[in-house]
Image 1 (tube, helix red, strand yellow):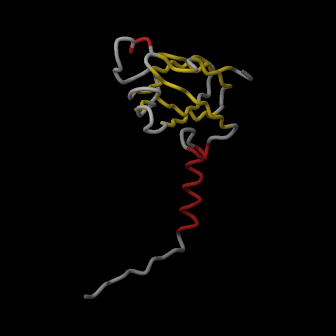
Image 2 (cartoon, rainbow, N blue to C red):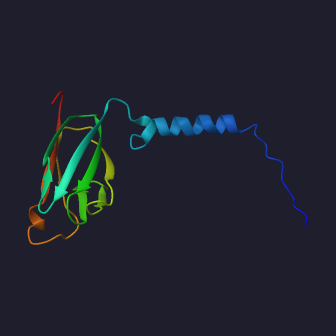
Length: 133
């Protein structure tokens, strides 16, 4: 058996790394561009509520939402964003999602997986304020 190998030229890699770093730094949606504090909020989900149902953060703050179900599978969707995840049922783990809002306002979240008669009442808000809380 004959294995042919090409010689890898590494001379261009430092410049490629600089280009990728520059592109990431200019892209507000990517991880390296995020600066400022990162907070963690624990959310408990059960039929038919989120606890807490209101979260307050300052504009520009990145928050990791750690979501745990106390009963069955639920969904977690932030309306108007690309966040839509499944929260595993009790004892099967925690779902974590990262949220960041640059502008003040109210961002509504809801259960996105049909979970019973009160499903449509499962809502909450992330209140993003101008400065402090």
